[in-house]
Image 1: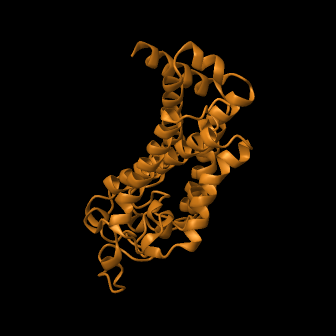
Image 2: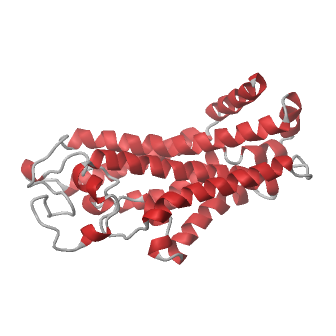
Image 3: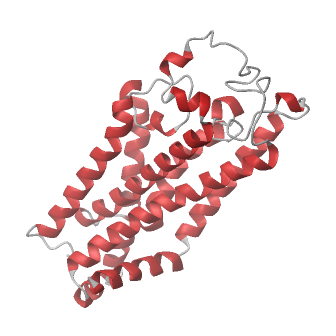
Length: 282
């Protein structure tokens, strides 16, 4: 157990010493800051009674806040940033001839399982930090609570207006959407960060089987998510589960089952690489 803990600390120290995670967090913070400026400009000149609370004013509510850059970040930047933080660590260790040295000082199982956990944690944090910061930024421009005349659903619609559009019938977690928006925002932040962690873990596991290209290792999981967002029907579209949306239909079973299924598949692939007859270090 002490050896496993030592190898895990080694991976985390090396990840913290690298520049990839810092660049990824900075890119995320810049994107969230740009979205925050967009939300402030949307309400420029409006009466204070119309200004929404910070839970609605969060940039993740891209439909209400008119922040399409948020979706661009989640769909196109976040997958690559999360995977690049530490998902390519084993690939780089193999290229630099470090992998064999580290594995012989502990065990191959400890080295790979600890590296996989570090990649998972790194992918989670690099997504969670900017998104949490974006919710905190909302408190600088919007009140903690707002009256019924404030914008609540989409721009120019308040909480006092009935849902004449029929969108409530397709809204996931409707009760939280109407009564506990802060909790709902945190749930989606955690959910998006979980997918960032899974993408990073997918890159790490992929590097155990393929040693051709660093770009391939980092890019394939991200590209699979992006391509699936265009090919899959709405009810099966995992990418659509990443955003708080009033109008996008989502399958609740897919919302919960998809990350668990991906995690199970990656753990099985990791276990096969550890228990198989092929030498992953070659």
